[in-house]
Length: 179
Image 1 (tube, rainbow, N blue to C red):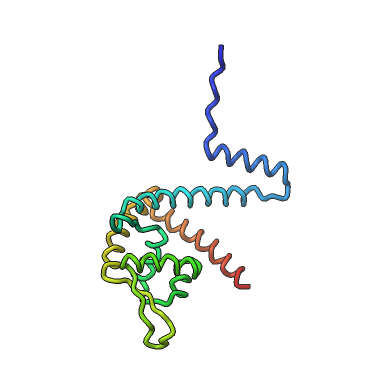
Image 2 (cartoon, rainbow, N blue to C red):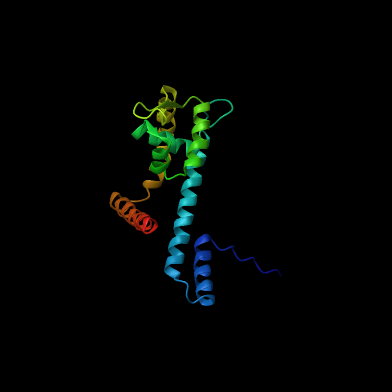
């Protein structure tokens, strides 16, 4: 008689095993830090994949859809534009090269316009076109429905605590990078 197959371990069982195994093999490893980062990776991956899938259902036209990168840039320009490319990069947390490539795509789809700055004609300002504003409003509403889905898992107090803790992690790293 054949033995029933054991169920494959879930992700959290794997994390427990990985932390235990690595800690035994490499005693200098901090198991709490390892567990924290593995959990953050998993959470951000799941959240990103889910929100990206929701966004993927939204078409700009027959041949194009708005990427999560594009939506992030539309958000920055909607909230703070018109802006120079370097400011868009800083506010979006993206490299100038990545912003430049994404802006070319958004401009080709008529969502972002480029105009010379009145103060320095060598500087180009990026801004949403009317079509870009309409697209942002339509797409962000759908995207935010996904954000609401994820946020609903936590109480208002827990959301505030999580945002505070993540902000603390990011600010500490920003300070260390500048030093």
